[in-house]
Length: 212
Image 1 (cartoon, rainbow, N blue to C red):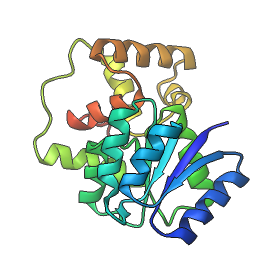
Image 2: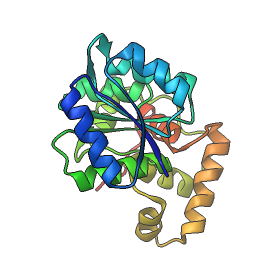
Image 3: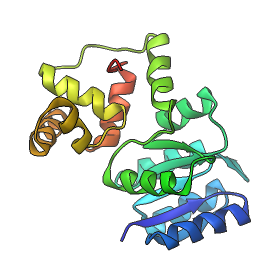
Image 4: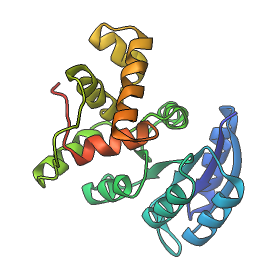
């Protein structure tokens, strides 16, 4: 059972999210309302996923995200925010968030986002992944070319960065699921990264994208 922590400074919203996730079979192991308690409780409970609001009582959820992901690299943070502003999305991703979902998302979308975040995928509300990738390109933060990757590995990396699952990538590229996973693992090893979230941040920082 996936263990989830919820961080939000509005008690009714926090309780509602906890109730919704509980009804979908998640173990809501902790809640918090501010940066200080979020970091302290996360370190004590080590959840699989932290659902993080950005506007907290004593600061920004971005700060909490950075501290939690730095201390607990196996814990993934999914931002759930009312804001879809570019600056907020970029700040969250730069500071360790695995994904970003707006609060207008449906319960089914939220359920899928939490599940896929726990599995290591990068999840964004519609349009936000392209926004992040596009902004990095606009700023010229493309960095050096991807080192020592084959064309196929680079292609798979780009699709991972767009939030596709291994199954979806396999279907799009007409490959087996096992082949896609092998490409992902080879890419992780070559880039000295640990999981798909780090792959996504790498791709964003290097301006990798796949045309529609």
